[in-house]
Structures are given as structure tokens and as C-alpha cells.
Image 1 (tube, rainbow, N blue to C red):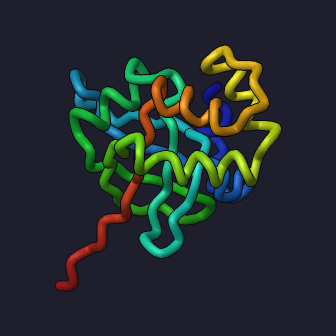
Image 2 (cartoon, rainbow, N blue to C red; image 1 turned 120 degrees about the horizontal axis):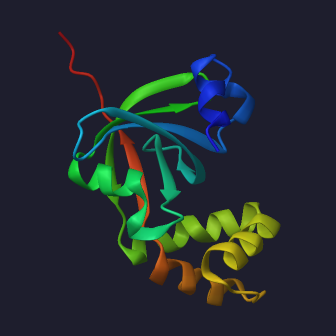
Length: 147
């Protein structure tokens, strides 16, 4: 599970394209820098933000950590930049999950089976189940102030 982190450490994150991102965050208790590689649900080109799902729900360590400290760094492809983590409301998450289901229908159904135990092929039903069970996070780039 840690192998993708090594790709980023070796400057090979571009091999994962924009489908995954490296999240650098601080431990909520230890304050130690932590890393996780997370699948990207959607990318908002206009905002430059990336939307991800906390696949293991509110119990994901990285999710608990960004709730405590939302200022993070992310790496996508060859780029790394500071970002602010914002949990999306269910209504705000729906269009991003719809986009993922459209782009990756097979992966969407497999994740539905794995994460929420659904074998349904009804996209709307799966989206509602995901939204009820899993928090979605948007990483918004933080613009550096000019000197």
C-alpha cells in the first residue's frame, strides 16, 4: 500500500498521472508529517482543485488529520503545491461523483461493491449510497502571496 508514495519520492509521480495525488499532512496528535496516496474523484480545472473520497469514511487517519489541520501539500503528476482541504457537503459532492462514474464506470461499480457492499448497477442509487457513507474532500490550491 505504501509503494505509490515511493513513486512520488523518486519523482516518478507522473507515472500515476492525474488519477492519483500525494497528500502531505500533519498527524493530529504527533504533529509528524504524514503522506498518503489517494485516488482523485474529479479535478475542477477552473479552480485548480482536486476532489477525493475518504474511502474508509470518517475513520480514515488522513481524513481525521486534515479535519484537525486543513493546510496541506499535494502532489499531482510532477507538480507539488500547498492546498487547503475542505469537506464537501453531500449536494456539492454529487456532481463530482457523477463525473467519476461517467469516466470510470467499471471502477465506480467495483468501489461500490468494495466500500459500501453494493452490487447495484443503478448509478443514482450507488451515488446516494456513497454520499451517505463517505466524506468527499476538495483540495483547493493556496496561492502564494507576492512579495
